[in-house]
Image 1: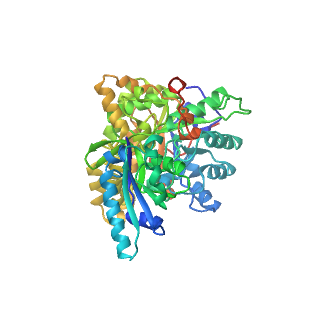
Image 2 (image 1 turned 90 degrees about the vertical axis):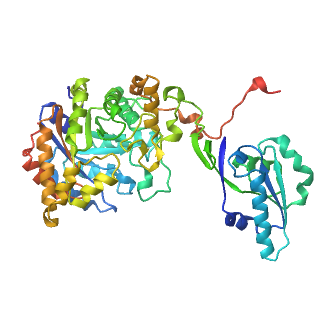
Image 3 (image 1 turned 90 degrees about the horizontal axis):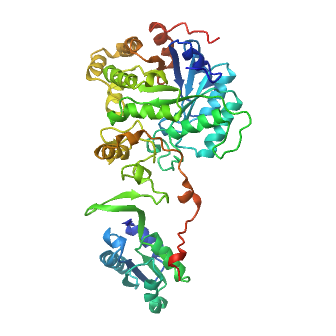
Length: 310
Length: 222
């Protein structure tokens, strides 16, 4: 695939390297040090860092400001943007704001429902959905125009990503849904956390059979378990995540003090296996509030050192 | 139909407690079907209020009337002769009826006795569910006759989101995932290929977003 933006992530993928991204959740406050600290822990082990956008609908420092912090540190942010909180005016405006700081990656999401967060009595916007956000960014970048049709001076240069969840229902439209995102203009995908590797392989195989894997870069999402409790929680309480019983059992059978270590081990084994899956172009390591473990995971998975983007 | 639900009686009492002559006004249309504001509910509310004021040692006149409709000038005129007997009205009609009543009887306070909830249908007695948000630009032709605007918690036009699990919405297992229903229906219609058509940005100017709406039909105006 031809490189279309100055994104380092895009360059690494286009060069055929396995890319590694990770993510940092902004703080529930205004202290810039929090995001800088997290970024410093992982910066040498990843190619780009996602900044989440009020994830689980809990109000936090805005993704754009935190991305600018990363940019000021000379790092490569991926601006996550949900359609829950912004109408098309705010979305285009924030995209231009990001572009003004030469942020080169965006992840287009619809966002968790606000009932999960700290403002369950608030409105949601959903003027557009994640599919239409992909269309919007591509339109602004490729046509250099606003949705209203006017020209943008200095259009954004954003490498356009989206999420995909191979494990949500209904399964029969999971591949058509990927095809639809590609048709809308998506260029890279970061998947939901993968624990059920067999199901993920099936999804990739079906995507491959339709020729989709030549049209989009798939970064496989992984999240290490910190404890058996977390494994059970992910299995039973998080919508759209599948954890095989034997994986929960493996965590539960491990003595409590050894569980974090076992969680990391499982994560590394998962990456090793996913490396063999046709069409996997990289990894998105989501170590939730456990960023200090990202270097170990990346290193032990044989993904270190990171390539020079040139 | 418009689906409404009864307001807690404490809330109604709080609004009307300063009045002495109160008309409880029902409506014979939607709110009767959803058992929130018809003749029966007018009677129940009136009795409860009489009991309340009696216990307070107050002599408050509470009358009951149920009109054919409260969203129609003609029917609202039926009570003009007796309106000077009251210093307040509790309307058990939907928000439309309450407002029409307030516009017509400008000097009499009108209090809502129900919460107007949504446009929906009776699934069974005692269970009403939403089907339409009156967005003004119907897209049911492309979604297999199932509306994602009213039935998806994120009103996704290209759903489902990642939170669709075994047919349920991520916000509540008791709520169907609209996109699961759409996919099932497209499959039944042998039109699953339609799922892959990207639905572009919707024109919301026909929705609430465009400001208060009007339908003007000059062909039927006299």
